[in-house]
Length: 530
Image 1 (spheres, helix red, strand yellow):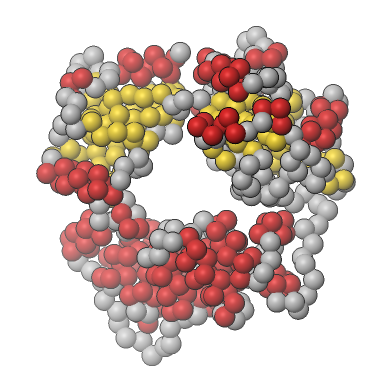
Image 2 (cartoon, rainbow, N blue to C red; image 1 turned 90 degrees about the horizontal axis):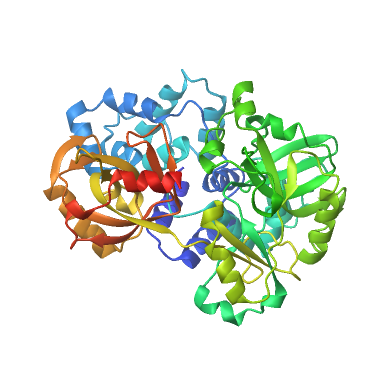
């Protein structure tokens, strides 16, 4: 466990991507099985322990530390695992520190009632770094600046393999990945992803640099609408049907009405949407509801029949990965598109095909994109006609060209401590708009869009203007305005204001703007309704 703790500690304080790759690679090459497999699973988010919740950890520390002292410490540190690791008053035990594989094995087999005793015993025999790593591992909140993709790239580089090979077989593997490491070390063959309804790694797009668009040949690219839903992979093979998110999460149970319509053989890439009402939409397609309708269904493991009927799911297909049993990812986009359109003529009713957007020049496509907001569309996708379907985010073949964001001037209402290197700063901000009664109501929250220097200035302002405290959250006196960029506004019954901003981020700190000149709620509601 201490070796894994050293890895996490080094990763948390290493900003360089290449340095993180080396750290992970060295660990995976030199650490024996099964410890390295479980460490890899932790870094990629593949471990989950149902009994190790934050409430359990709070209960443990409450038995040994004065509640007021812990509350003050947690308020200062801002991270539960770090606070407990530092403040824990161990009771010496005649036992060695646990290994990471022992922790994983015992937590996996333990009942909810047994988990607290296990954690308590381990916390007593580990040092502060080990306790921190243990709690991060148990709760699944590593936050050391490593994505699942980065961990897989590090694994591939460490053993001189292609990251695409790792991605291809990943979702058929289980921790601690013995067959994977046997293959990587030349002791066995490459694991077979199988012919069943397994997930295949998706191809992703890069944001388009509009300043460089003239360097691209418009005749070489195809344009599609970027629909406002959730990217999914529909799989129907070997008598099995599955619906996956782009990260490989199986959401078949959340959308049984969609999966029930998978009367085909193959793998389709597309956008999960909710059918709307009214006249046909753009290009004569089935009308789709706002993202908020889809949001009601996301995360519902067993949606009611009523919800399925009021918000029926559908898939707007973009691409084809398997046509029957044939893997067509190696063919060009143009060839796959021909196959997709042919398949679409007899596709199940839960599918339709996302049309191509004809254009002759970038200037013409720019005008087309300008009208995307009026049609409730996020923007455009550009795809190289000659490109194969390549896992990951290769540079050049695919671009996403989102519509320009909307902006509002909003007043800061609350601030909350961040995580990781931001745990000592108030870096998460809730902002609001003025009502007709000149009261502020929250409409969004953001934690990005400012420099480290600006963060320090904001943190100082929050501390100087705090009027109330709610744990790690500070309420501040109205006095600071943010210019907030966002993709859309949508009605929301969960918010006091009745509206919420989609993907808000701080565009600019308006130190110069009086709060009285910030936008009003009626403006935000008009955007949601229009």
